[in-house]
Image (cartoon, rainbow, N blue to C red; front, side, top):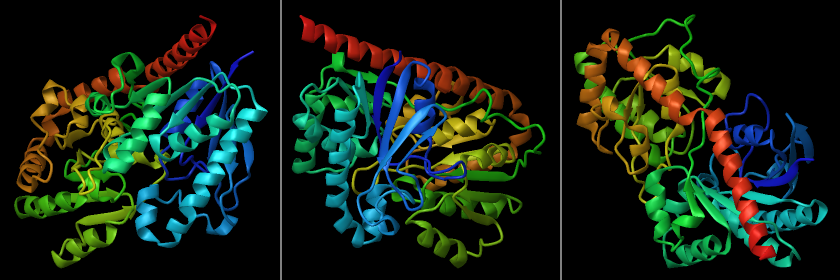
Length: 407
């Protein structure tokens, strides 16, 4: 009989065409080969409160009247809080409902281990729920970046530290995050670096049926401050001066959309920049395969929030795009020797423009580089190997906790 695993997350794809990030779901599918996986995620209007998706049991907790549950989905929780004052009213309701739901699930099922995504709010709810649990299972938390880098100030740092020192193991998705984690006093023996994965064997591959446009630049991601898309459109304006044939696809939505739209209209770029909104993951391989250059112009937001890694670059690499990536601490894990020269400092409009122009001029000649970036993505980030690493880590954490109990 498989050991039971409880997974906690802020969002979970509601259907096959959902645009919310699916990495937690994809990881759970890998883990389901070894564990009986139960996921606890927020409820959303029209969704069932419980169902089975591809061998994974999905439980959804309701925190307000169904139609007015707007704190999650449609963007990150921090973005949704900024968007509507109503969501601040929902925040304590969400926290209480999630804590109760965790406690109830742990009473109902005998979980061997808990895998918690994000320190806050999931880790905070979990830390309270286990205090009311007679025999709590071992706990592993995975931080994805925003929860570790954001929420600055002594209060939030105190809360995060209390959560992190009370659990059994922490994983982070990039080497740079490990440096940040050490500031919380977590010993290296209780921490690991394991990124999320991408299916670069079967899904994010170059589609031979799609002609590659060597004048097409693409961005995929949330239109949030830390993504730095405003710097990309500013650079694109400069590129247009020398390459009038170039075009830019922006895939995603978010609070920065209106600002980006204004810049496009004020600079007569409406015929050259397509703001296509959010797209389901199934549509991305074709969009990447039709493009030559993928840009990830990430920055450090005013709040301190920044990328934990940037998996969209891996998806683009898998499809054979030339990646132009901001040089942030976490994105170092994406930069191998042959693409470091294509990276630029964050907020460097001139550097972005220069590298995009260079890639356009020599685009047809980059077949070797496209193969190199694809091989790199497959060797470092494919779900098959990433899933095994998470499975082994969870089993090790559970074994160590049980050995400690029995000592």
